[in-house]
Image 1 (cartoon, rainbow, N blue to C red):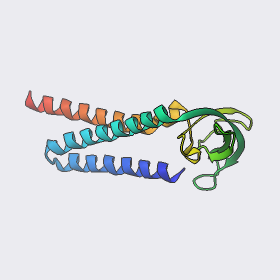
Image 2 (image 1 turned 180 degrees about the vertical axis):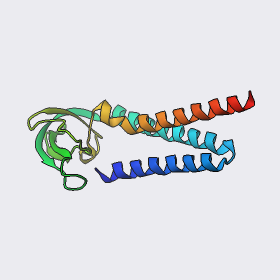
Image 3 (image 1 turned 180 degrees about the horizontal axis):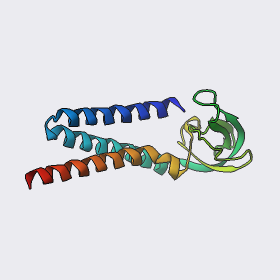
Length: 158
């Protein structure tokens, strides 16, 4: 698990913990609505930044050149490295930025890569499933909490 992933999971855990604490203590409902809306705003902001990146990024095909098991989290975490060329023909090697419990790609597989024209070192795997995972997860959590709070507020008024 990468540091970014760990930080996002920690953020979500803290958010859920705060939500559960405020529900237990029955603090004003305003906090619940504010918290839900904050999650939705964070998700929209992340989604928008991802869209901006993809709009200006150059897309190319990379080749999986290495598959390895990560020692960081669990010995069964499969990671891979990709080699790609920029428009000038310079070769770059990058980590995928994510790992999984099952191998997603084999050595030699083609992988879509996107990178900013000014800095190919900031390349990312251009997979919609991976690229938009966190904005989608945070947004859905915010929407579910907002719906739950709205439903409970409606029931209390009835």
